Length: 150
Image (tube, rainbow, N blue to C red; front, side, top):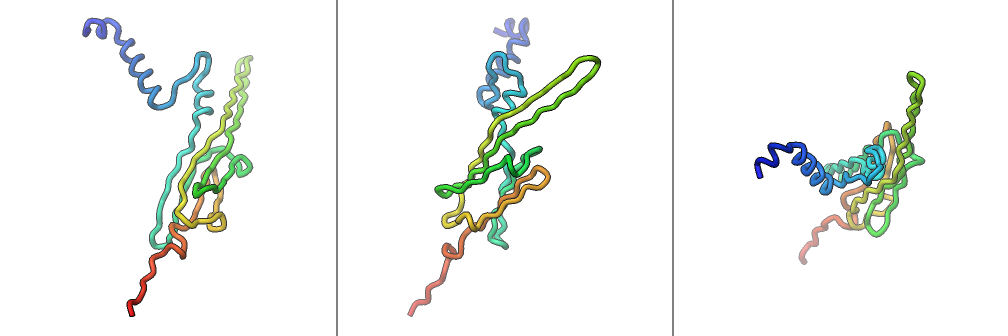
């Protein structure tokens, strides 16, 4: 067995790459280039921070190159859904030939909301490719209340 891997070292690296691709979702169909698979598998980075002092949760999504018209935020069944569509194209003319690249694809990220949060409690802003969504960690109805014993 070691003779095989010694004689064909690229076979192992090819197997390793294929194995990793299956578990990371980076598999491409025959004829697709990496740009197409990138757009189809685009999943914006999301960071969620909780501030106990302000009773706020802030979720940030990295959406480089997108405008607010490209992004939709929906609240349904206690879930906040951020979705949108990536469409980019570029053209470069160099030494008598033209290179055109296009990327397109849709994305969706879902975040569970604390019980009792309504769309009125949620605010969102998109600045410099970063979408910031803020909502309360708990609503006043959910906060613990002490009952005096008579």
